[in-house]
Length: 52
Image 1 (cartoon, rainbow, N blue to C red):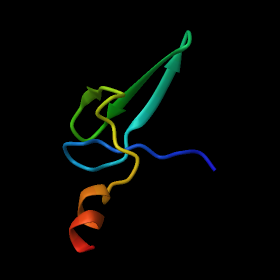
Image 2 (cartoon, rainbow, N blue to C red; image 1 turned 90 degrees about the vertical axis):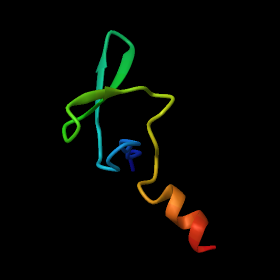
Image 3 (cartoon, rainbow, N blue to C red; image 1 turned 120 degrees about the vertical axis):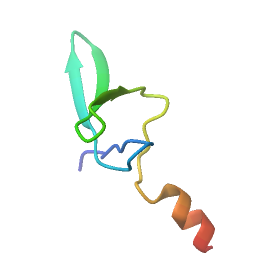
């Protein structure tokens, strides 16, 4: 199972682009690149913590 990555701004799934060993993440909804340090692995990452 491959990991899914999400935009920190809109929480939509981002597209993972890989070329020449470099990996970039692109959000089609925001129409911008997302830094790999800011991309999130779960779209409900913050709301899960609040509900606990």
